[in-house]
Length: 333
Image (cartoon, rainbow, N blue to C red; front, side, top):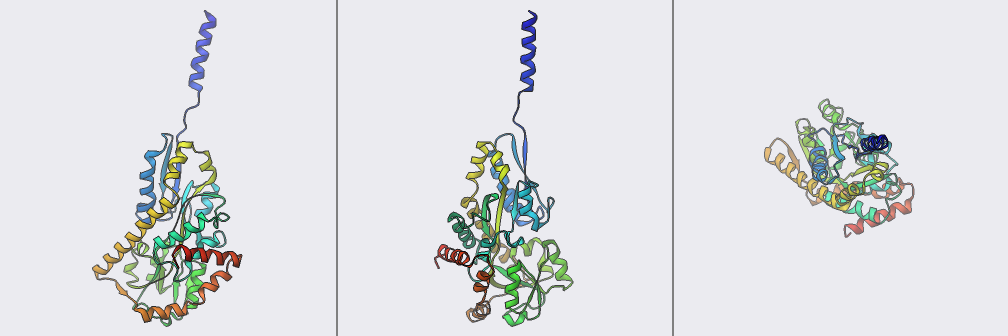
């Protein structure tokens, strides 16, 4: 009788000691504020879509406003496991993602859809394997073409930029500005408004969603609609986190990532870009300088050395040329 009692007690103890599915929060980092375009319309929207498909023990939570780290640190935050997933701008960390910057070549990309086609063609061809080897890539996409967001009367021709300082999107962006007679200044996104207001810079090379998010229309009311360069974007996941997830969760995330996710993002990006532009045009407080064919050709001529400069700045010129050829083929050029 005593033996049976002991066995029952042991069984109860083992039952309470048995492992249970541990609740796990996956931290999704965004350097934009909660109401920012990528925070609200991309990352949070994706979280809301994917979360119900994950097992009960796994949740996704957005950490916006650079809570986990500054914009240039996002890739390292993911690699170190401080963030499980993050929105990353590859050009913020020069040298780490060199071929992703092919979309910066002037004239190559006008829309996010075009840039997304380029990066996914490179990825599917294995050309980006080395630079993303330490990550699980959830999506590769791009911004729409960058425009000139200017104080004062704006710019219509390259000569108008002579000796001006502008917020630059990247180191190569600074090279492009130098070709146009200007100089680039690296300024974190939240500080662009202040620097424009104080006339530390005369403009910013950026996109319409940032124009709205950071209220730049108040200090830079002139937009030159020359989409001369673009920026690569990525949503990256910590590789160890990915490997440790249950099979069901990996399948759910896999189904909502890759080209499918990237093309969805590109659609939202381009639609929002057009919507914001239309709103500002109708609002009347922003002047848009739309270039005719002759004026656009003048900018094209001024930026003609850019392709060779981009290739020369890559670790391997032959590989860079192959990436450029693949990019053009993806766009049917």
